[in-house]
Length: 310
Image (cartoon, rainbow, N blue to C red):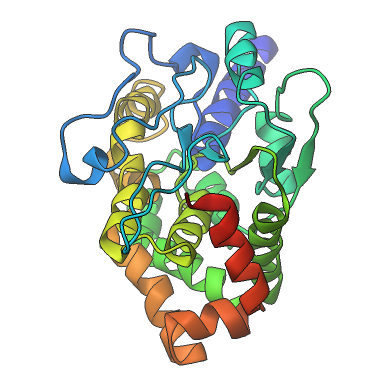
């Protein structure tokens, strides 16, 4: 009986950590056939259609390059990559990643995420640079809600728009939190200064990673609509994986209504708009957020464009 309870606690912990981190425990992972290898034909995904790096242990790994700028120039491919968690990469994946020629990998996850999900698995000679950006208590929120196994409590915590409201609060901290701003700025400066390929990632590759990519694309002259499309494409890349997780939570008895977590799994235009609105209110404009909030000077912005645009 003691072993049974221990196994139950372990399964519960795995499922909770998987949800908070955007990953699945081994027993709930989608089959290779179920994992998307190419985006579906949607407006959001079409702008990122040929940029995915297909891996078995991660589903949202993409080349940031390939987009056109306002003046018709092209963002260079093979320079900067965005990703979700890299702790579950297979040996074959390591071979694929090694071919990217990366010299730096930046990990935006907070310590609790790394503790539950594991450190990055990278090619030999490559170590991650830890640059944590707060989840604004998201992990604790999920731990409490799902760990309770109480559908009433879960509805109280996540239902009636509360989950989406919580995500909007997370996006506000991208602008309001000084430590977060410093981490985003340091990453953009790294990209400007480096002549070697670089990758940054969080857990799901959609929020912290999505915001960083949106900033980078806008800084180098990619139209706002295109940058937003790259951000929204995470929904396509993660769709099958996230649906499998919701199914696992229901079958495991952790949630009667796992659809409550969909707002936490998705990226949404209004999440992005929340951050942009906060940036305008605090710094006068999006440009003000870049220069005053992140402290990016004209030289850094010019270096970014020189590095990233043909």
